[in-house]
Length: 311
Image 1 (cartoon, helix red, strand yellow):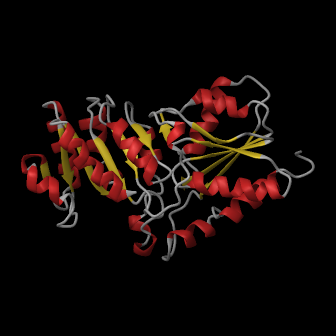
Image 2 (spheres, rainbow, N blue to C red; image 1 turned 90 degrees about the vertical axis):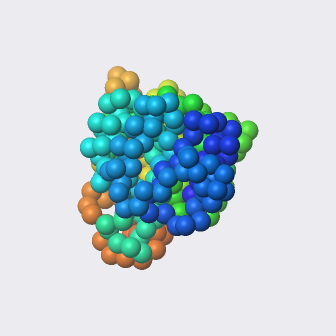
């Protein structure tokens, strides 16, 4: 997924002279072709993330469309003030390509885990937040990103994730994609968790529980219409995200239900990382399993919520 995003920056740069790339302490071979052929639009700024945001803002004010790439934690936590004041307050078209959203950098420990990045940025006016499901959808997002009018946060997974998106479903920033027809349960996923939601829906079907899946690649602006449509006729909505349960997809869906439905709301079950700093080291899958976000964990949580009393 990351390689597709980076390669697409060069593709867009060859098409549009407004596109510039700004990296922070990346490898020497990143975008070697762009560095060779368009050196005036390729910048590698070292470990200076806050400077990178200010630099991107200046370039955007001059009519460029900067694409910035570094590790998600350093791009959000470390640069929050610069993103708020330099980018969002001015509503500038900068694209923040955040490597390692969620628990990707589990081997490096909690300092590198972007478990609250969407919550931080959801609170900022003008910021859009997108988490593609796979590399194929990443390419469609990058195509759509060029003309997005304001700042855009692009949350990258590790890469090598199963391709579950479909080209025929189309792609538009802010427009959710139904992936599986709904039943008494609808799973609402974002990023790579949509793939796990689809697999969990298969497990639930084998138990006689029909579960639909809605892919919300854009957490902000949320496709409220699609969420409300998914809620119609459902007994249970389940959000599934590789993010803290505070301030992410589950919070956004819950707010939409509260704001737009007077009664008859289905129960909302939020499956997410706990409201705690991640502990320990290991693999991304190991930490996701500990948080109950494996395919089996998701299916078990849904089946448990649909107890006879609830059903």
